[in-house]
Image (cartoon, rainbow, N blue to C red; front, side, top):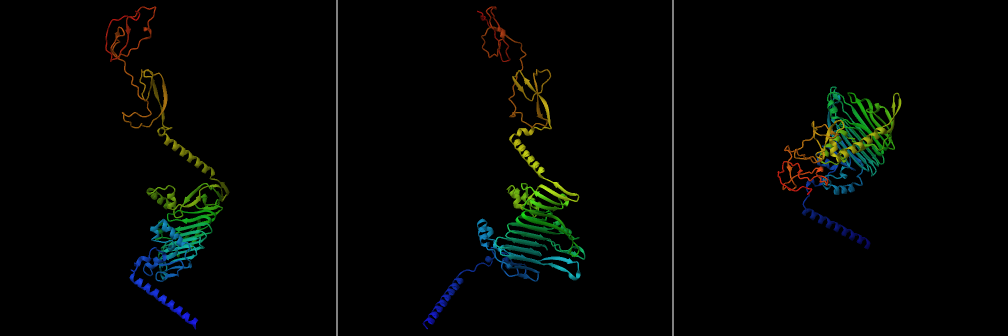
Amino acid sequence: MATSQARKNRRRRKAGAAVAVGATAALMAGTMTAPPAHADIFPLSIGSIGDALPPGAIAACDAGDAEVSNGLLDSSADCTGASPWLFSSVADAILGIVAPDIAGLVSVGGLNGALATSGAEIDLGNLFAANLTLPGKATIGGSGYSTAITLLGGESTAKADYLLAGAVAVAAAGGIANAESLFGVSVASAIGRPATQILGLGSPRVENSANAKSLPFGIAIANSSLTLGEAAAGLVSNVHQYRASTVALGGITAAYRSLDGSSGAVCTAAYGEARVHEQTLDDSGAVESSKRTHSCTSVLFIFQKQQNEDQHGGYVVYAIKNPLDIGLVSPFGDNIADLVSEVGGGILDLGPLNDVLAGKFVPEFKSDLIRVVMTDSGPQVETDLFEWISGIINSISSSTSTQALVANPTAMSLSLDEQTTQPVIDDEAGGGDVLNKAAAPGEGVTETHPMIVNDAPPPSVTPDVVRPNDPPEIVVPEPDPTPPVTVTGGDTDTDTDTTPKADATPSTDAAPTTDTTTTMDTTTSTGTGTGAGSGE
């Protein structure tokens, strides 16, 4: 009995404590101000976007949520096969330190979800089976980081197995994107075209597809889309449909047919595959024919098999790639990346980093050490090695010449194909060379040296400015036409420039000399006097 009573008392005390706690919580709730209605929206997550919009506008869910569907607009989002990424909190904390403003708007973990919207199309090819809706579907799965987004119809599926894996799939306007990752990263994007078909005029639905699969330590990227011109041409006729697929193990691969029309297959991986196909559709949307436009397979990075319709005549090529000749390409369009890089470089010039930020981040071997082209007439062995070496030498030579011209700007004015000779005159009377002075007939020119100068018009120089490379000009006075004046004796009070002649030196055997003759210039005054000769 005592034991039973003690148990009852403990139960009463626990119940009393619970009531006290509940009352205190109710009292505090009554005194506190309710948070604003939008406080739970930020940071955004894919699931919260669906909750914030009117019911039925989109279908959205976060990892681990149940499937959400919209029967009216025929869209659905399925997150049941995915679990929240374990490192989401760590990634959000890092984002909060690096970019706190962005972290306040959206979270990394919030993008681990699926979102889908449906689209519209006009498919009246068969009046008994008319279709005006383009369904949208998005699905994610796995314990890694996965995101699937479908806009205006189409289908996207992203599956990331295990923690260290990421998969992103984006589809739009009827495209089909599938990204699957196993200890790697996969990105797939596909943009299609809704049907615009009325009684046989126009184009059926174009379902461009992109499939990317990454294996351990691999990055696989697939992109498939129409150009704007092709999308417009579908109003009156059928257009092509494109399919891109890629696999990467221990490296990076890309298969792309981009919005700007550029296409290619890149395999820079320990093992990789990439394919791009062009398909022709009939009026019902069925595939009539398919051809492979670009493909590659790599083993240990440099051993590759390639076949591109715009290279080597479209034949199969077995090559050993040059590992020292690497370029960067954009799987989302080289022309678009060049435009973005040019615009961005005008704002903030970061050099080669501008291209990377613009989307050129996939490395590609540009030349071959040796290749075998399987032509119809038999194998042909070719190489790009000598051309590559020649390009390096020319680049070094050009760089050296540029540095030399910058270091010596005066050499830039000389041109080897525009040269002539002009005389340079030695003026003995002035004791030096007078430059840039033509020799007139009758002048005492003792020596003429050829000098190479430029025929191009000389730069305009102000007459008062002396060019740095010219020697100072020597002015030679003209001789005075006044006849020489004889001066007796050496006693004169004027500034004279007298030069005694060599025979005026006194001699013991000669008679005394009473006069000395000098030649004075126009500034000398004339005087006469009587004095003793030098022999006295």
